[in-house]
Amino acid sequence: MKNLSGKVAVITGGNSGIGLGIARSLAAEGCNLLLVGMDEEKAQRAAADLAATGIKALGISCDVTKRDAVEAMADFAYDAFGTVDILVNNAGVGYGGQVFEIGEQDWDWVMDVNVKGVFQCCAVFVPRFLERGTEAHIVNMGSEQCFGLSDPQFGSMIAYNTSKHALLGFSDALRRDVAPKGMIVSLICPGPVATEIWNAERGRTAEYGDRNPVADGAGDAVAEMGMDPDLVGKITVAGMKDDDFYIITHDYIRGMIQDRYDEAYAAMDKTDRWLKEFG
Ligand SMILES: NC(=O)c1ccc[n+]([C@@H]2O[C@H](COP(=O)([O-])OP(=O)(O)OC[C@H]3O[C@@H](n4cnc5c(N)ncnc54)[C@H](O)[C@@H]3O)[C@@H](O)[C@H]2O)c1
Image (cartoon, rainbow, N blue to C red):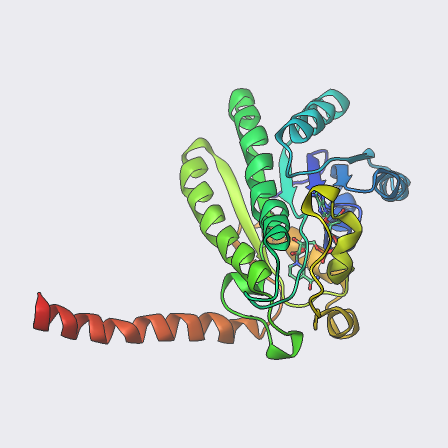
C-alpha cells in the first residue's frame, strides 16, 4: 500500500511502546487510527495526542483473547471510520522462565495474548475485508524470536519464544491463503526495543491467576539497550509501503537467520545417508 493517506488502521497494543511508535509513523503518513489496548484511558490519551496532528484517531479497550470483545471492537471501528484498511496485530506480553519454572497459567496467558489474540483479530477482520473486497494489509508483530533465541543475557523465555515462532508459521500460512484475494501480510521482527514489555503483568487478567515467581532477566537490559520504538515504527511503515512480508529492524538478526538455516540444512546430509541405509 504505497499511499497510506486517508487509510484506516486498527492497531492492537497501539497505546504503548512499539504499537504507539507504529501509530506515530502511520499518523505522519495521514493514516486514521484506532488504538486498542487493555487500558482504555491510556488508549484515548494517546489517540488524542495523535488527533492533534490532524488525523482522526480514537482509543478503545479490548482484550484480544476474547472473540466477543474483538467483534465489538471491529464493529466500533467500522461504525466510527466507515472502513478498515490495515490491521496491526501488535498486542503482546513478555514472560521469562524455563519449562520447569513457569506455571500452566503463565503459559496459557502468553499463548493466548501473543498467538490466539492474533488469530482472533484475523478471524474477525479477514471476513470483513473479504466481504467489502477492499485492499487490506495485515501486519503481525513477531520478533527476532521468530528465527531463533534471543541473547542469553536476557535469560530463558520458553513460552515467549514459542509464541513468536508460532507467529512466523501463522503469518506465512495466512499470507498464502489471503494473497489470492489481494491482501498483503507482513511480519515485523524486532530485536530488543525499549518498551514496557517486561512489565506486561499490568495487563494480566484474573483468569490467569497469580504470576509464578520466575526471575525475568530481560526487563532492565531491554529498557537500557533496546531500540527506540519510534524507529521501529518508521521501519515498519517503510516495509508496509513496499508490501514486504518480513520487516526486520535490527541488523544482527541476519546471523540468527543464517545459523537456523545452516543447522537445518546440514542435518539433511544425515537424511541422505539414512535414506541410502534404510530406504
Ligand atoms: N520490546 C521488545 O523488545 C520487543 C521485541 C520484539 C517484539 N516485541 C513485540 O512487540 C509487541 C508490543 O510490545 P511492546 O514491546 O511495545 O510492549 P508494551 O508492553 O509497551 O505494549 C504491549 C501492548 O499490548 C497490549 N496488550 C497486552 N495484553 C493485551 C490483551 N490481552 N488484549 C489487548 N491488548 C493487550 C498492552 O495494553 C500494550 O498496549 C509485542 O507483541 C511484543 O512481543 C517487543
